[in-house]
Amino acid sequence: MRSLLILILSMIIPAFSFAQSSSNEITAGVFKLTPEIIADVSKRLKAQVAEQGDSVKESLAFELIGSDEGYNLFLVLRGNTGTSEIHRTVSDLHTAIEGKATLVIGGELVNEFELSPGQMRGTSIKGGTEYTLRAGDAVNIPANVAHHVVVAAGEQYMYFVYQVDSEKLK
Image (cartoon, rainbow, N blue to C red; front, side):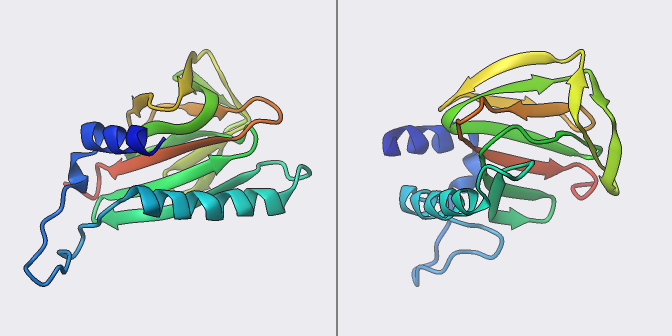
């Protein structure tokens, strides 16, 4: 598992390479991600999902691992299927870490509502394409494209989502 995470990060997220000064200080806005950090965050997320129990509508825990102007990296754990989403200006690089899920991309949100400015949600997707994701799989979801993570009953699914906001990068 540790080797797989290192391979994934070295291939798809080159921003993780970092420069250090001779005093081992990391440059502002740059962060180092290690297997130990991932394991620690994963443990916290699993504890949070366990505390939520089976009665919650959307069993979800996430933690911001790194960010800078225009991008965020989250580690996310889903304990069940949540809401469908559209981010108007944010694209997601979705990388499966643990478990299995179906990612539905495209189509239209069903029962669409605005959660916050530029953040649309729905109960499902009509007309999207389904992709089965397992540890090591990565999918780019462009801004303004509907997507929905579907998790089988009784399963958990952990993934990185690397979000890039095109509006903040202009």
